[in-house]
Length: 107
Image (cartoon, rainbow, N blue to C red):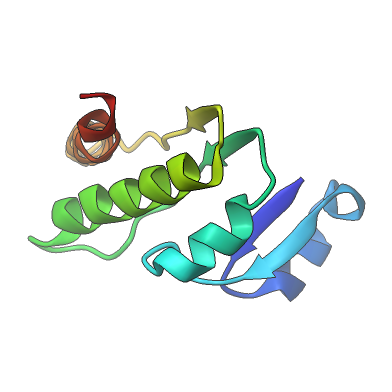
């Protein structure tokens, strides 16, 4: 398993760390994402909130689009998208923004 993370050392605290390779990067950076999905068949997209305020939905769309484009370019066959649940009404909007980022590639 390969994980794109801001700080690879933080993976050490995870019980599955021995089975993971940490790649330092930023999900908003196409080059970071390309390195993380290189030679991968299935990619998982699990990105927690990327800020707050009025622009967080645009950020969600943009990062999903970057991830999907780089995965497609690398020949990834499947993307599994995970979402967190927030009970203040925001989660639905975050999920919708992420889906919009991925759905454009299905066309």
